[in-house]
Image (tube, rainbow, N blue to C red):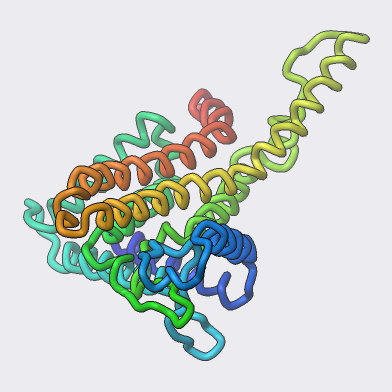
Length: 317
């Protein structure tokens, strides 16, 4: 059960990555997207006088709440820290008094960890999942918890209105912020590089991407080398864009889901409690699916690079 404590500490560490991105201003993409959304919003409304009469929905970019020295704390970072503290608290509660016959929180966490391990083992194999499980389990639990916490009434809907009529929520779903999803995707990419080099070495990684897999002799061999080198370039482009696709997929689904719920609330104000209910339960499912998809994609990306090494290792034994 020490794994639970390690997962909880890693979750808290991941929650601090977006603050570093904010402080260093290394995520201009989110600001650019936000400015484009705001410009489009001004064009469609036609007049700023209607800003106070309309609900603007969730802003595209996270809103700064307060500063701690040079550290800018946004509403999405606040939710991330809250969820991290809750997960750490429950993990500590579950492992505080471990029993041979588990019950309560210990039983739930053991079931969760064992189910995730067995599920990933069926995909990746025992040796690889034993090495990488700590990250994939953390990603799944953290994404699921933050997605569902974002559906708590008040998150994204309670806030204040600025002098220019823009609505800014006090709390915002963590993954409705591109900084958070980018941080997780970049962290996985770094670990993917480490695991790939550990499993294959530099020459093995090069051969896996650019190596001649078609054989042949003479001119045909040269032709196949050129073909697979070109294919390797395409593979490098695909690898580089994996963090981009991972971050935008999660961000887009969560951001769109939260805005749909808010739109449903405003269609018929006096039925605001009833109309969003089907979409609310749909978002519960979407939150689970997105956590599962993110974990599966990262696991498969790792498997594609490391599976040959594991097969050779298994044959050697």
